Length: 441
Image 1 (tube, rainbow, N blue to C red):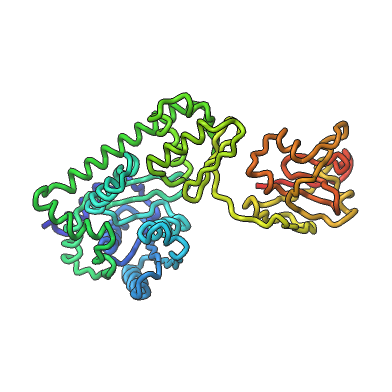
Image 2 (cartoon, rainbow, N blue to C red):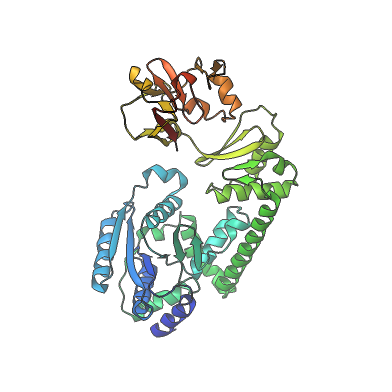
C-alpha cells in the first residue's frame, strides 16, 4: 500500500506542470470518498503552489439523504477553511435522458456558472475502465470510447482537471483510511439495476481475477480511441475545407465524399455544435435525406434538442424551436429592448439620425410587433413597386423556418418594417430627421 505522502507526491507530479501558480481551482465535492480525497490532496498541495481552492456541491434532491450530504460537505470545507458553494438543481425535466446522464449534465452546467480557472473532478482509473466498457456495450464510435483526459480545455469555460485519473479506487480508499478521513455513501451506488453499478460490482471483480492489469490496459485502449478520434476530426476539417460557416455546411461537400467520410464529417459538424451523437442507422438516414431530397424539399431532422434543416444548397444545425402564438402582438412604447419569443432572441431599438424608420411617422398610430399572416406587402425602396412579403423573403433568402417567426413592425395597420429585411419606403427616415434602427439578435 502506498503511503499518504507518496500519493500526494504522485498527484503533484501529474498536475504541477498543468496548473500554474495562483490558479483558482473549483473542486466538485459530492461527499463520497473519491471527492473527499481529491479535496484533501489538493488542500495539501495548495499552499505549496499558491493555488486558490473552493468547492461546489450540487444538490440533486434525488436521495432522501441529499440534505445531509450537503451539510457534510459544508462542514468539511469549514474545517479546512475552503470556500464552499451549494447549488440546488431540478433533475425532473431531464429524466427522459436517464438519471445518470441528467445528473451529469446538471453538474457540468453548475460548474460552468462559477468563475475559476479549473474545475477539479474525482474521476479515477476505475471510472475510466467502466466508462470505456459502457460505451462499447452501447455501440459507441471512437469518439464515445475515447479516454477522459487529465486536462480538458473548453474554450471560454473553465478547464476540466482530473488529478486522480491514474489512481485505482483501492489506492484512493487506502489513502482515505490512512488519513482518517470521513465521507458519505450514496445508497444508489449499490443498486445494480444501473449499468455502471452492475459493471463495478459484478463484472470488474471477475475481470480482476483473470486480468489483474485491466485498468491500465483498458485505459490504454481508451487513449488509442481518443487519438483515433483526433485523426478523424483532422480528416473532417480537410474534407470540409472552407464549406463550414458557423452553423451551416454545403450539401455539395457531403455529396462529394464517400459514405464513410461523409458520415465522419456530419458527426464532426454535430459534435462541434454540442449536438448529441446519433446512432449509425439514424446518421445514415440523415445523410440520405440531406443529400438525396429534391432541391425544394423541406428537410427537417431532429437530433436531441437540435434540428438539422436543409435550405437551397446548405445544411443548417439549429436549436429546436419552441411553439409560439401566431396571434402574438407586442406593443412598443419606446423601450430599448424587447424579448421576441418566436425566435428566442431580443429586439433592440436604437435612435439615430438620418437612417432607419422615421421616428416622426411612427407617432401617427400605436406601434406593435406582430407575426405574418400571409397577406402582407411593402415597398422596399422609393423607386420600387409594392412587393408581397413572401416574394421579398424569398429574394432575401430568409430560410423558410424563420419566415413565420420574423418580427413585423406595424404603425397602426401599416407594415412599416420587416425587421432585418426591409423598411417600407413610406416610413424611411429622411436625411435630416430622427430615425429608429431595429435589430433582432
